[in-house]
Image 1 (cartoon, rainbow, N blue to C red):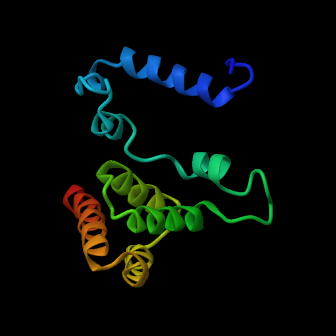
Image 2 (image 1 turned 180 degrees about the vertical axis):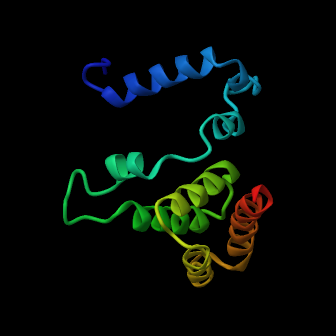
Length: 138
C-alpha cells in the first residue's frame, strides 16, 4: 500500500520523523519517543482548538469538546488508566473545555461498574494529581 493509498501511514511516518527531531523526545531507545516530554511541551490544548478538532465543527448538532473530553476520560479509565500522560492531559483538556472537578470525578466514578475499582482508583489518583498541581500554582 502506497502512502497515497494510506494517508494514515504517511501521517504516522511524518509524526515519527518530527518526534526524532525533538531532542527531548528521544529518551526512549526502543521507540525514540517519550510521551512525558510531549506533555511538558503542550500540557493543555486551548478550548478553541478542542472545539475546532473535537467539537462541533464537523457536526453542529454533535457533542461539544467538554463532553468529548469526559467520554475520553471514561474510555481511558476503561482501559485501566494505564497511560498516565494521556490521562493527565485529558483531565487538563476537560477542565479547559469547561468541565468541573466534580464532573470529572463523577465521570471516573461511573466507570467503577464497568472498569473496576483498581482502574478507577488509578484514574482518580492521576486526575487528583492534575487538580492538585493547579491548586499549588495559586
